[in-house]
Image 1 (tube, rainbow, N blue to C red):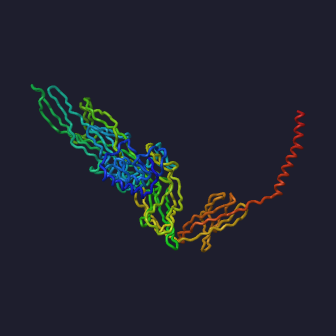
Image 2: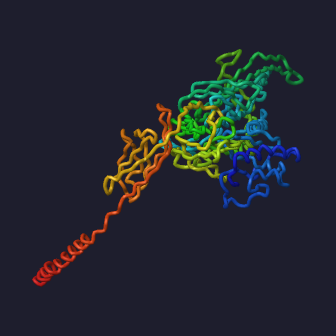
Image 3: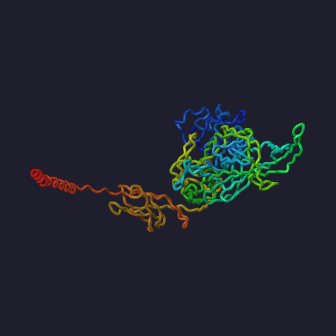
Amino acid sequence: MRVSRLPAGLLLIALLALPLGSALTPPVTDAPDGATRLFVSDDRDPNAGAIPPFVLSEIDDVVQTEDSTMANVSRMRDFYYATTQPPYRVGPANQTLSEYRRAQLRSIHRNESTSLWLPDSQRSNGTVVTDAHITLLGTLEGTHTRLGTAGETRSETGSELLLIPRTGTVITHLDYSTRLPNRTCTVAGDTKTCRNYTLLDQRVNRTVQIGSQTWSSNSETPQQLEYAGATATEPATMQVRATINTTVAVQTSTYVRGRDGWQLSNTSTNETLTLSHTVQDTARVVITTNQNLSVTQTVVRSEDGIDRIILRFEGPQTLSDRRLWSYARFQDSTGRVENIWGVYSQRQYANATRGYRLRNRLNTTLSPSTTITNRPNRTRTRQSTVTGTHDQTVSFPNVLELQLAARSRQPTLRWTGKRGVVSAPKISRTRGFNLSATPAPLDRHVNLTSVPPRGYRTIVVTNVDQPITAVHDIHNDSIPVRTQTVRERNATLSTKTLNETHARIQLTDTATGHPLAGRTLWLSGAATGRVTTNADGVAIVERRDLYVTASFSGSTNVSESAYYGSAQTQVVFQPEPFNIYQLLRSLAGALVSIAAFFVFFLPFAYMRRRKS
């Protein structure tokens, strides 16, 4: 479902208020697979169908209705939120998103007779370990993106980059079955030898590798891997690996045929097999904190204090190389400039396959491929019992995957505190570039609007009385900000018409009259859209219409600690005067041409036709 766009403050209050409802209602189970998937989006979708009764025009009204039960709220398990503002909680236990995802993974139970694998699992079988796989489900702090950029090769499903911070937590799913051969016996004359296999120990060593760096995990957190200080200057490969080490004891029993049947003669456990089996999964990742992005803040001061803030973001113009900032916070934390990015969550896997162990008497070969502790380099072939599997499709827990999307075409300003200025703070000007030709592709079950994303070089905020003190990326990591303070000066545009088609425009400092060179003037009604002033602050403009408008949007001169404000002017060209004599001469010339046609050409054409 789509609902109307909400202010971040209202959304924050509403979602934080959701846990209050749980105190008034009994806990319920998680939403069923077919439950409504609600997304807080930018606009309404008139074609989305009937809106559930608990979804009103504003999400904050949910907690004020009689239908505000946890059964209803839990169905809204997917929310669309600003990247660094995920305050909501999900499920009957009011868990954070990270807690919820880990709890869902912990709900997967396995034993030595069953294994649960996902549709894209690369299963592998060893000597005693079968149906083994490890699946990379993402990172708690990371988000996937399918946004393609110019010059980047896109697959059918998009670029599929996983954006991760320098330090984070990888979540994985590991599953396998251990299938030891059943008791086997061989008879030679009056002697029978039987072998039993017993599992002594089984341990799993897990690692995560990003580029050339590797981190190991501990056994207390089987569904997650921690890494810190990851570095990579370009998109790298994240690889998770699990090595299952199994220790098997082989007990040999010898029986002698007697009057009453086989009598146990000797039992020995002098053989131990140490087996190792490794499975892995990979994903393409970008460590966003290693990407380039330079943020410069210019504080423009007037006689009355701060007049405006100019933020400049310099860096590559491709998504995989440019660090993605999420918000810039003002000094008193009463306002913030929020970038275009948003995150939506979707269920990563709906179904999985459960393999059940079936006992069948067959001949099999036990061939350890790794070292045998007591008897190295020895391969044993014996008759034993192996198991087949019965596969069944089952539902997989609601492990949510985060996807990055562009929720708006340009940054927005959120101001929550008291203003020390007369007019409301606002973003007066932006300058940016397209990051992608198409919006992020969404899952077919997601009713959510995603716009083509843009990157921004310049953002001008006016009517503010405090500077920016922090800029954060999409993982809430801080981005250094360089600050420079300048004084505001006025600029003047003067014009002079040179002829019927050209005009001279000069940009100068109003107070001193000095020319402002190398500045861009934006034109309307001219042959070109913009021009740059020369050393004398002059630009020659050719008209396209009778009216040419020249605008100067403002610029900073760091060497003079000055900021020149915007200016605009208009050049009016005179229309060409109406000349009656020239018109008559043109008409007379036309009449002479017509008369000559009838007098000279037609008679000769008629005579030639008669002769032919």
